[in-house]
Length: 224
Image (tube, rainbow, N blue to C red):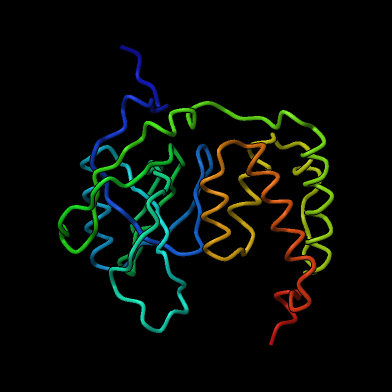
């Protein structure tokens, strides 16, 4: 049998380790670099290597700024699993890893802690189409997204490689903006749960317009 680096829906496990991260998003076929240094997440990494190399990235239901936040906050029910496509060990006892987005999931039940990290029984069925590449069915949506994105970047005085942006696929464009922009955790979750690339693009346009109209939005370089 010819070896394949591509994973299939049928390869997805029933139980996955959970990595709760607020304001962080991974989407199918996108890549996300991460640093692991907490003891429980180093154990999580070893567990993932022995169990299909899959980690479930999921957001807590509360903000990082919540003073009453616990070590084990309540989680949103929907996250996205990533496959460990590369990793290296650093001299200061960290793992630098690259996750490649595979498929979204819904938590069915959480299991008991294992070496300090969380695991869950998950259901993938509603997101089977995540294994298919997506395109904007309405090209006007892409054009509007580019226009709004340009206005947003001008407002925060940020530069972009527009040649690369124009050359990107619809999916890469929408997912990279969704993952890269500093939206809050509720906005990130809404983008994650969008049913299709068209819906996510329209949601992005709405979120970007809201931030453009926010009088407090300034360039990161000029904030005190």
